Amino acid sequence: MSLDPAYLEYPKRREGMDHDLYTPSPMPSRKPVAWPGGKPVAVTLLVNLEWFPITPEDKPFRAPGHMVTPYPDFRHYTAREYGTRVGFYRLLDAFAKAGATATIAVNSAIAERYPSIIADILNAGHEIIAHATDMNATIASGMGEDAERAIIAQARDTLAQAMGKPPRGWQSIARSQSFDTPRLLVEAGFDYMCDWVNDDLPYLATTEAGTIVSVPFNHELSDRQMIAVQQHSMDSVAQQIEDALDWLKREAAQYGAGRVLPFTLTPYITGLPYRMDAFEALLGGLAKDDATWFATAGELVDAWKPQAG
Amino acid sequence: MREGEKDPGLYDFRPYRDRTRLEWPDGKKVAVWVSPNLEFYEIDPPANPHRKSWPKPHPDVVGYGHRDYANRIGHWRMAEVMEKHGFKGSVSLSVALCQHHPDVVANANDLGWEFFSHGIYNTRYSYGMDEAQERAIIEDSIRTVRDATGQTIKGWLAPALTHTPRTLDLIAEYGMTYTCDLYHDDQPAPVHVKSGKLVSMPYSIEVNDHYGFFVYNMSPREYADTLKRQYDRLAAEAEASDGPGGTVMCIPLHSYLIAQPHRIGPFEDVLRHIAADGRAWITRSGDIADHFLSHGGYDAVAADAARYAKGDA
Image 1: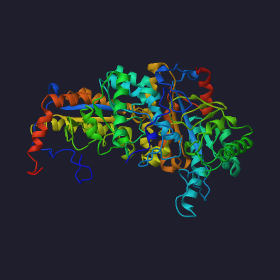
Image 2 (image 1 turned 45 degrees about the vertical axis):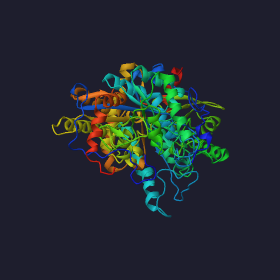
Image 3 (image 1 turned 90 degrees about the horizontal axis):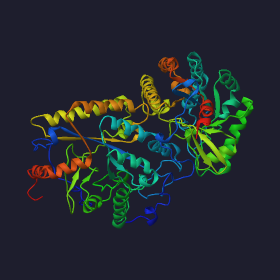
Image 4 (image 1 turned 120 degrees about the vertical axis):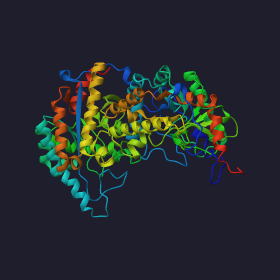
C-alpha cells in the first residue's frame, strides 16, 4: 500500500498563506486602532434573520437550522417563523431598552414577505446586510459561478428595493463561501463580508476584482454554537461574554489598542421567553460598561478603515 | 508493533498499584507540560483515500478560518499568558508552519519552547503511506525543525493522530526518544520498538482543549475546573506513600480554542493555580523523557512490568 506520490508534494509550502485572499498579520505586528470616543471595546451584535422554505434543498448543502422531519415539517417551519414574528421583536425591544445598535443579516425573502420588518429595523437605527435570498440559497464551491452570482444579485437588489439603497455588507448562510465568493461580492459592489472567523479585527482581503474588508464574527461567540450546539444555558453564555469583555478590556488597556467583541444571535434561539431575562441582563451590563461601544458592521469598518495601514 | 494481531504488543502490563516510585527533580510530584499544537491546515489539501480532511467543499471557510485564528491572534495571546506564569511550551508542530509562519515558530523558539513533530501539515495523513513515504515525512520533520530552530526533535505526535504499523519503530530508529500517541498511563513507560529506546509520554485526549470544548461541550470555566481537578488528583496520588511516585500531566492546547477571549481568562487561572501549588515540576516533554531515561525510570518501570509477565511472553 502506498499513496500517490503527489500526496507528499507541497506546491503551496511557502512563506505566507496557501492562497491569495489575504496575507498573514500576527497581532503584535499591527498598529493599535482606536474607536470613536476612545472606547476600548467595540461590541458588534449580529442577528441572522432568516426564512426557511418548508421544502428544503440539499444543494450545495442543507442550511443549519433547516427542516429535519419528512415533509411537511410543521415543527421546524413554524419554530423558525416563531423566531421571526415573536423572537426577533423581543430582540428589537431588548436592543432599544439597552440603547444598543446591531447588524441584522437578512434573507431577502424576509423583505419580500414581511416588508414591515425592514422598516422596523431601519427605524430603530440598526444596519441591514445581505444574507442570501432564503435558507435554500447556500453557497459552496462546485455550484457554478452563475448560480452564485444570481443569489448575490437577487439578495442585493431585493434588499436595495426595500431599503431605498443597497446593503454594504454580506454574510453567507453558515458563513460558507466558494473560492469565487469574495470576488463576486466585490463585483456586486459590497464593501465588506462577515464570513471569515480568523481574526478579532477587520482586515483587508484582495480579489482579482479589487479589495473587500473582512469583518470577523467569531462563530464560537454565538447562541447557535453555545446554546444549540454546546447546550449551554443563557446564564452560562452571559458569563462567557462577560469573561470575554473583561479580557478584551485588559488587553485594550495593556496595549492601548481597540478590541472587538462580536456576538451573533438567532431569533428562534435567544428570543425564547425563558432566555430573554438573562439576555437582557447581559445586554444591560454591556451597555452600562463605560468601555463598550455598540457598533454595527458598517460603523466598525468606517472607524477601522482610515486607521488600517 | 505486532501488525494484524489482536494485541498490537506496544507495551507491557503494569497496574496502577505496587509500582516502584518514580522520582522527579527536587522532589516534585507532578511533571506538568503544556503542549500547544502549532498547526497549519491547508485550504485545499489533496484527498487521502482513508480520511477526509474538511467536512465541506473547499474552502471550508469556518474550519480553515478558525484554525488560522491561531497564527494571527491566538498564539500570541496564549504564549503571553504562559510566559507570565512560567510555563514553557512543548510544541506539537505542523513543520510546514516553519515555512508559512516563521514568526510564530521563531517566537516559540525564543521563549525556550521545545518542538516535536506533528507531521508536515495537519491536513496530510499518514494512512496509506508506504515505508519510504513515512521515512520521507520523518526526515522532512527532522530537517525542517533543525533548519528553522536549531533544535533536534526528540518526539512525535502523528499528524492528526494518523498512524501506520511502522510509525513507532521508525521514529525510534531515527533517534527519537518519546511518542505522544499512546494513552494508556499517567506515567511514562517503555514502548516496544525494533531499535533504540522509546518512551510513551503521557499526552492527553481527555483534557485536550478540543475534547473539553467539542466532545464534552464544556464552558470555559468548566474546562478550567477540569484541569485544576486533574492536577490536584495527580499531585495527591503522587504524594501518597503507597502511590506510584511522580505522575505526569499534559495540557494539550490549540490556541484557536483556548486563546479565544472568552476562554483565556479562566485558563490563566489554571496556570496560576498550578504555579502557586509548589508540587509541580513545570517542564517540557523532552526534559521528562531525558530524566526518565537517565535517572533509572525506564529500567525501573521495565522491571515492574516484568513481575506481571506471563512465562511464555
